Length: 460
Image 1 (cartoon, helix red, strand yellow):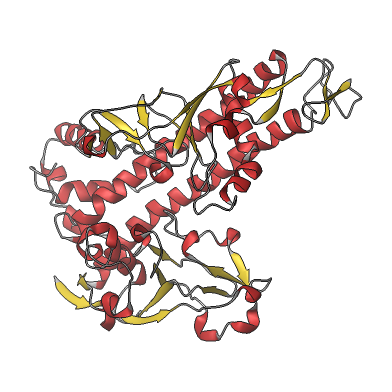
Image 2 (cartoon, rainbow, N blue to C red; image 1 turned 90 degrees about the horizontal axis):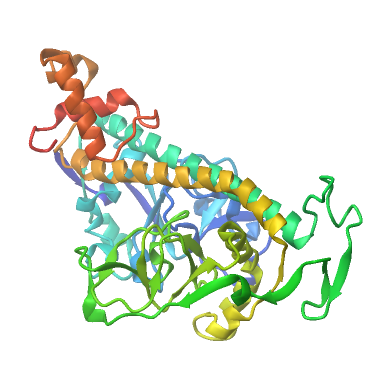
């Protein structure tokens, strides 16, 4: 396979610098905070900048690839986004570098995924154990990229794009589901319009309200005032000795902070043989250090470090507790900007958050409705993780030639034609199971068979 330097495959350009006075309605702008773990930027959530300070050269086009150039968190340097569809003027900040691929030389989508594969990524990414802490055009331009035939580039690009488009769709569905649950929580436990005995909104329909001196507001008759510690068992994290950490699975899963958080569940990465503070399976994990308020749910018993707290309900409604914590986000954001170098919330500050405690009838009804939503959210999380696992497993294999996608005509003489069909199907299904894949249509089944057919028996 031919190799070419990135500098010969397109043009590189640093993003624009601007002052605070330029932050106003105008053109949308992508900054480092918009990368996260995305493949495609969420164009709906971007900040805006005064259009008069933006030149035409600063605007992105479909097919551009954007990199994090510089950031205080060195592990973010080298992260990338692909600009897939763009229907409005969008620029990018000076902490980013844009690559505009030459479409006459290379398929932009292929180039994006090639640059995310381990072989290329280790040439420019701090997180891949390089010494690069600030990414420059010189460093990026020197990256060597494997260049297969153009038809192969298109096939690989389609495969990985299809996977990531499905992941993006899952993320949007998750956001809509969570928004539904948050809206229901707000109606019932903030506006107090839970259904009364006749199914009508309680407060709006004239339900009895009583002034509560502790909360300095009216609450439904029969509800109580209390603190978060009255409805939740709270465990503040404590980090074990650093020498006990390992990534080989020895001991118990350890989460220091929100670094490993996912949509709903964290991803195990670090373990400890000397755990100190514990979270139980199903506990809510709350980030108590910047950014304060991020939430996940523990998939297993685990150890938590000082960046987290673990909570479970004392009153039998874990989902009410979860969405109560979501409702505290405005308060948590104040903790993030409390004048310290790094925002945080103390044990006392967390335990003493004031709340209105509902009757069990409202808690039970809320739990029953939101359980169905939460079940769908958790299914989406599982599906998304399987797709990410498939993508991350296939990426290096297909990019280094260990596996290939064969043409239909080439597969006419493949093993699945000549082998006993029953035996072949059994082997193929076993391979899918070993990779943790569920053939539900997100990735074309024929493409998966093509990859399977091209592999050596040892790799299967």
